[in-house]
Length: 197
Image (cartoon, rainbow, N blue to C red; front, side):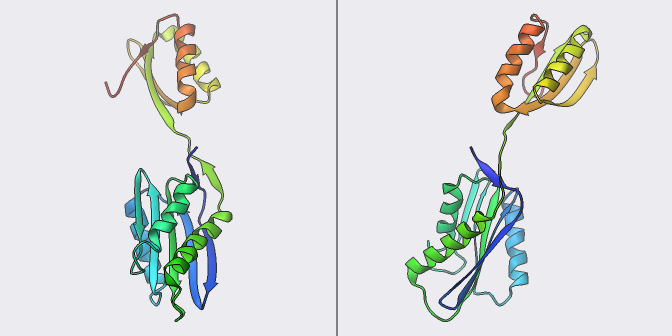
C-alpha cells in the first residue's frame, strides 16, 4: 500500500569531511518541490550541491545538481520507490569537504542520507477515495444517510428537488460493498449518477 509521510524528517552525515544534510517531506507536486529546493539554496548559499528526488502525483524527478550523473538523484529516488512512498520530496544539501568520495561513495552517501531521514519519519497510508452520487425518493433519504454514515463515508452534497440527490466519498476498497448494500436496502429505487451529469 502506498504511503506518504506526515511531517518533514531530517538527517545529517559527515563523510570524509563532506557534510550531507538530508530531508524527506510531504509535497503535493513538482511545483511545490521546486519551490522548496529554491528555498534550500537560499538557506545554504555556500553549499556545493542541493540534490533532490520526488515521487508525487505520478510524477518523479531525480536531480544530481552537478554531482556525477546517476550518483545522487537516482539513488535517492530508488529509496523512495523501494519504500513505496508517494507525495514525498527527498533533498540532500552537500557541503564538499575537499576529499573526493568517488561514484560509489557518493551513491552510498546520498542513499544513506535519505534512508536515515526516513528512519525517523512518521509514515501514513494513502487512502484512495471514490466519489459516489445517487438520487433516491425522499422516503429513503434517512436510510441512505444512516448507511453512508455507518460505512464511514463523507457526505459532500445534498440537493432536494423531485428526488434527493446525494454526493459522498469513502475509501475505494469499501465502495463496492456499500453500493451493493444500498441497492438491496433501497429495493431498486436508488439511481446512481455517473461522472459529472
